[in-house]
Length: 109
Image 1 (cartoon, rainbow, N blue to C red):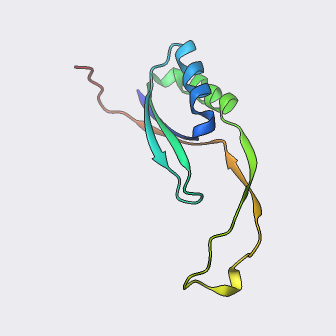
Image 2: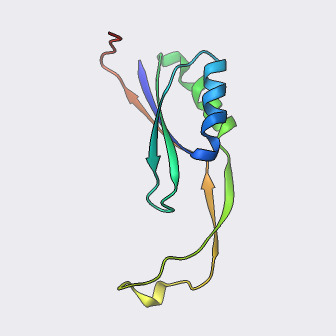
Image 3: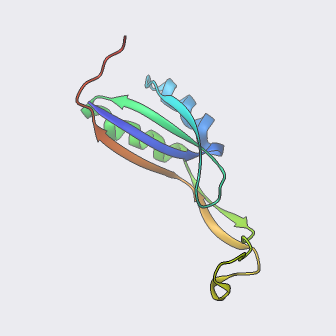
């Protein structure tokens, strides 16, 4: 058995949740915050059998899309002025960060 931990952008959360349920997978959703853009994310905890991993990874990939987003830079307050960019920049956001962990035991009490 495996535990899939998927961190996805909030914009993709409902779509992913709907498709996981449609395919018969149960997941626990946790609200989380990203460190880089300080925006909301959703972390999914999904327990699956070993032979279901690729199916779940495909569902995640199909429903969590990367996109470009314009962000305003944070001021340099005490930072290095040489690396400060004073104008908005485009960054790629979205997609999913996924971890697959071995589960030694699973109990539903």
